[in-house]
Image 1 (tube, rainbow, N blue to C red):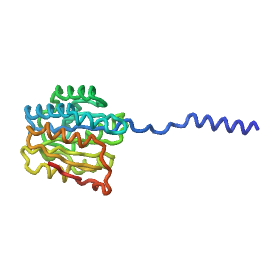
Image 2 (image 1 turned 90 degrees about the horizontal axis):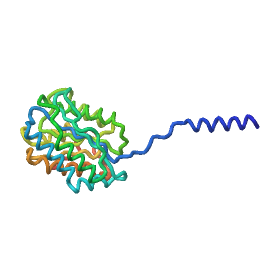
Image 3 (image 1 turned 120 degrees about the horizontal axis):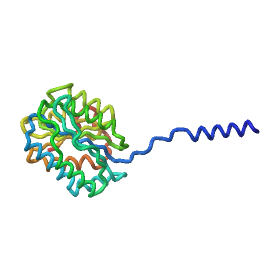
Image 4 (image 1 turned 180 degrees about the horizontal axis):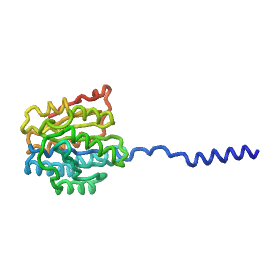
Length: 243
């Protein structure tokens, strides 16, 4: 009888110290806004992008989309990039769950400084950096997404398709906002080389003056919980392109 009681006691102790199961996701989305700050983007164009992001997070449809998921909250950060080794977190992770938190984030965006000036366009470096940022973040999210905005093709660092494929393998989706400025075929390039993962897509801004409207459409589509499709887009291939 003593042996039986001792065995029961040991079993209870082991159960008490057993690691707890991983907690369920607390966020619907962890989103990195990756912004091209290479030489092709001048000071006025950078200002238009930041104003556009701020306006998008003040858009009532975008704010409503934040609360459409089961957790009613998302986390967002903003990264600036250019050369392979030139990336900076301009706005660190912020959790958005209501109009007040969205407004606070919008104010951070419209007042953020340009931390990366000029250089080449390493889309691969920006994607790799954003992927590491997502990996290091103590965030439990249903979806993890990198939102790349830029007007140029990858011209430094490893192939952008290699960075894209690595992100996809880590469970990250990459969407794109191709700014038609100096490269007339930039949206086709983004669709073929940059975007990938579940429900990936690319939208087009017709110049920087169109950025605010385009990024609002993009964030709305990005934040809303995607409707499951029977045939998901193949990995490593841009799923859709929209004007």
